Image (cartoon, rainbow, N blue to C red):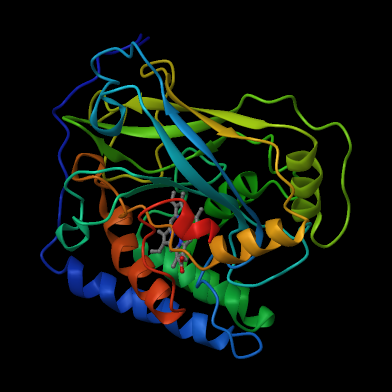
Length: 345
Ligand code: HEM
């Protein structure tokens, strides 16, 4: 049995020569689906279109971190303003009881330093995007976009198209996808969430997770937009908080960079707390709260809005670079905020 292993800096990426062109083409396919789903003349996100609400708060980098955790943004204890956006994964606006991935976009504001995309060096944001699974169950970017396309179109054609994309892997991938979708999730605020895919962590590489640190909700909310209603009820009743944690790369077998489908075992690489997210009591259902949600909706949350030392890693992450750029351009997202008041108005 393998016990806890030491965090390693020996990670590598395998970048194929034809990647850039392939990933731009995939982003264009998503753009086509995004255009087809425009509502009332408004183009929404290609994915994660339905927002449950946007909130503001503070991001506290914890003190006294061990050396392998005190990297990049986490090198020095500090406080930053943050905004978050909760969403469903699809490009549509279905009932919240429909099978879907749930997500959170976190934007930390005021982060100076070289960025993963050099053209963004004058921006001051570091984003983290998270979903409920600690891996990405679809092996390649082509298959992912193929699956999105298959489930976006004519429902009768979905199954044959999925078979065309995933072949004999369809049953195992579908059951893994269902596990990550958790249809009847009680609460979006009480879920543990994950980056699912790795990022650079200074000289190391890592995945992150987000663990609720507030009391779990007790009253179940029902209805088409039940996550938004729950968010309104709980954010206006008291503070919300989460702990952000890091899980390091240890070796290519246990914690591979280029295989998105592999969960990294906590038995070999345990999570270390690195930051606290605090959302002070606020009222998303008030006029001001609704205006804030609308302004946060216009922002672009993107894993490539990152310090160079937190660059997303692996082919699935590299494919996201083009996908988010095209989706945010297509819907005319707002430029990166320099301060919290750029968001709050
Ligand atoms: C573990 C992997 C992934 C995670 C954790 C993730 C998470 C998220 C989240 C939370 C959002 C909503 C952000 C917001 O609130 O604005 C989002 C949006 C989006 N995702 Fe992903 N995603 C993943 C993989 C992918 C992949 C592989 C692609 C495509 C190749 C992709 C394409 C998109 C697009 C196009 C958007 C909308 C961008 C926009 O217009 O703002 N995602 N994702």
